[in-house]
Image 1 (cartoon, rainbow over the protein chains, first blue to last red):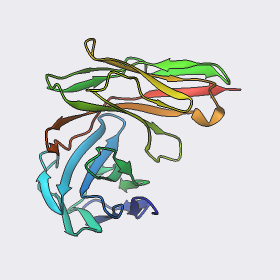
Image 2 (tube, one colour; image 1 turned 90 degrees about the horizontal axis):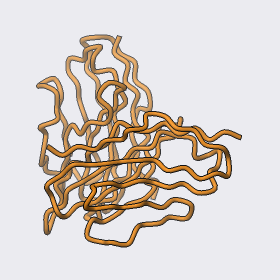
Image 3 (cartoon, rainbow over the protein chains, first blue to last red; image 1 turned 30 degrees about the horizontal axis):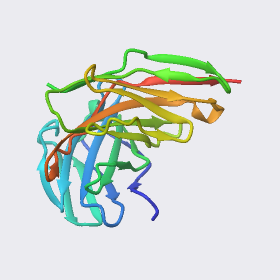
Length: 112
Length: 118
């Protein structure tokens, strides 16, 4: 298996633009997580899905953030409109019931 | 609230030596998992080792081992025979586990930056 695949690896955009981050989890994993990493706050859980259903989105900062998982092999995290304070590394991770989370390489987002 | 504390922001070790990274956590849960993740400059988050709280035996993975003290809520990572490739940020993490399912929220410490010097 190729592991968790995220795209793009880097994203530079201007304030106010829509940003879409993509994730393909490991086949067979039924949990998918979106994390954000910043120097100030470390790693924070934004949202996670179980069997494509959002279970906990309490970490989503505000209504500008939305996440979807239309099927077991694909998820998106969308920010609209983006703001400079959204600049961070966004990680997608997946796991099965054994609790071992496997992370993608992350998307470095820079909002100018 | 459940928290994970790593009290050593930075550490360094000479190649081939042994180093121990500290981690403490706070929870009222009795059933949970603990992890150490490594994040090298490439940014990839790599699972190093996992410990199940109900197991008394300390987990080991090659040169990596843990000292799990449940009563003290302590979970330290020992790296033996340190290699240059071990240079990375190391994150301690905790996840509570309910019977039959996962709470889902892997809670991370702030990390310890380890530098292995030749």
